[in-house]
Amino acid sequence: MRFAQPSMTSAKAFFPLVLAFFVCLPAASAAEDAFKAKASLVTGYDNNSGLNQSKKGDIFAQESLFLNYTLPAAKWTKLKISGGALNSNYFEATDQNIFLPSLGLDADFRLAEATTLETSYDFQYVDFVNNEGVTLFKNEWRAGLRQKIDKRWTLRGGLSFSVRDYEDRKKRDGGGHLIDEERQDTRPGLDTELRFKPDKKTLLKAGYLYYVNDSNDLFNDYYDYSAHQVFFSVSKKLLPRLSLFYKFSIEDRAYDERPVAGVPGLVQDDENLANLLGLTYQWRSDLALTANFSYREKLSNANALEYSGVITSLGLRYSF
View (cartoon, rainbow, N blue to C red):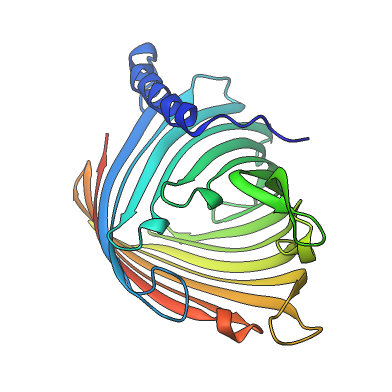
């Protein structure tokens, strides 16, 4: 079943109303800290903005605003509404520019003293403003369990299902001919994560994600694949005002039938690596300075598709 697709204009008009709704929520709630918001400004340099072997670099600027409101509920229930928008602009590689509004609903139910049922729904409108062929609507649902083993260890895992409806991208039949129907991908997934907090200043996470992408584009099942991802992260408070974050992930993506050009019988298989290192300096209780360095690399049996790139950025984040 396909989702009804709102127009680009209606989607952009919807989110200012949502943001205005969140701004009004604190006045309607007597609960302390029920409403939280973060606004950020980031600028940086991407040395491979096209994610290809030509490695053309570009400067980018990014602005974001994210809000969340925790609704008053019973002690065994936690309900949260979140929303916001991210706007990212490259100065030359403008086909990478993104406007990304989002809305989320989370409901957690405590089943036992240390066991919680997690449920969530997330909506995103991923608008590539100068490249409408990859603009899409994303709907995702997730349900899982969180088990607190003791004061330091927590285990969580769950099942998810998402649908990606492309706004202006026709699907192809088995012969490669375009059909008057938009492309749609579905993605069921499974995730698990182990958290360890050795002390008050340190949090370690390790996890695994498996998902399958199934597209209605039939030509060589070009967008159909299964993926396995493992990751590790550490958050550490180095000084009273200085914190560090590091995350490493590696994902193996095995395509069902996508052929490798020039190599008969070989099906494409990719390995995507990502490293992120970040520092945050809490200048004031509501104002923080951020510095980030990320390295990503794609390895593939289709050699022409391999690439690597580095992004460095500086930012300012305001919380209210």
